[in-house]
Length: 111
View 1 (cartoon, helix red, strand yellow):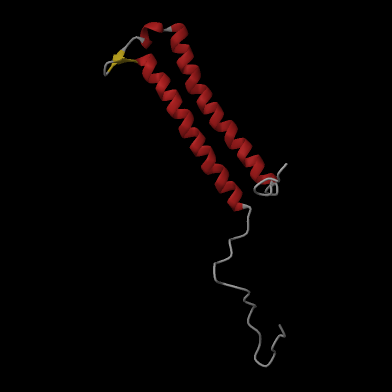
View 2 (view 1 turned 180 degrees about the horizontal axis):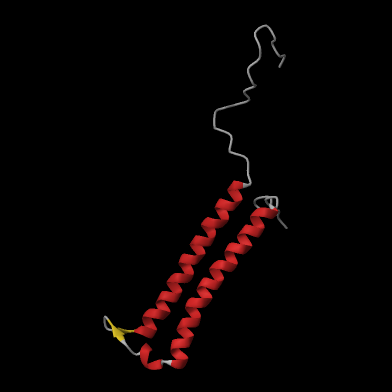
């Protein structure tokens, strides 16, 4: 067997809680929109027969649900990346090398 390509990142409990909370918020947003779709189908099927631009509302609403799922997934990804980067130290600049802090004149530090 082979090893994982990248080692797992250390868990940041605060970021994990934030990600879980954001996931639930986005889930309930999608659930509300989907419940509206189901409600219209169950209790007002005539509304779904309305034609807009040659396509009935049921098809448009269904496609809208698919697009909304993708959009919410991208939003969740962005929120997770932001919460993960907040818990990390800033990246080291390329080419900075091992610079040591300045020392007082006449107080040289041996390498």
